[in-house]
Length: 296
Image (cartoon, rainbow, N blue to C red):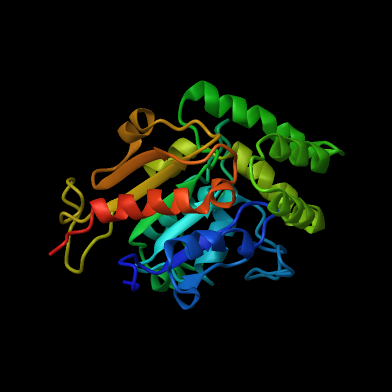
């Protein structure tokens, strides 16, 4: 635990973003930077070409696996904004799945299979470890069938020649933060390499987010067997911080495995609530964590 009573943080930024875009969450929570990990997505922040075979992870499951091989998660709050929240759910699902099983979210809303499994890099992911909790900030992870289908239809935007303008326009419509941050966020978006950003955006829109939610599992203690009631009584707490993306707890909870505990709160008005009002997002996270943490 940090001096704030919170676990250390692992922060995952959104598409076209930078690690610095999510650090205001840690600062507002009062978590020392030494206890914060904030990785850059591939070729964001000059991360460069990466991957086991020298390639670039270009979809949700492979990018989640790449992050887990390079980023600590054990005992931490895994916090992701927008695409980063989609990746955080996928990362938690990969950590929970047995080796060789299809990765959570590997399928798409139209039933296609991208072929990812938990076999590759399983040892590195095991070392990363199950997080203490997951926080998803205004990510596009609907579960209602019509909402999932509508999002999947938008994936065709990523195939257009003007895909950058389409992405930028969609994000700009949801901006409600300070002007200084707006300039920085969109300058960083414009400076991000085409690939794998375009492919990752398409993958996010095509991902079956119902499978992401259903793939979450609570941690298993040493010597424990899955008991159907939270795996030896352990729990995986999940917080969804909602601003512009419509996610209802009542819709998601039926998909969740026993022991996965979801809370949905509203904070902020724009798609970057952690930049618009960092204290409000910090209060939501701190209150949620304190409510589930024993005082004695």
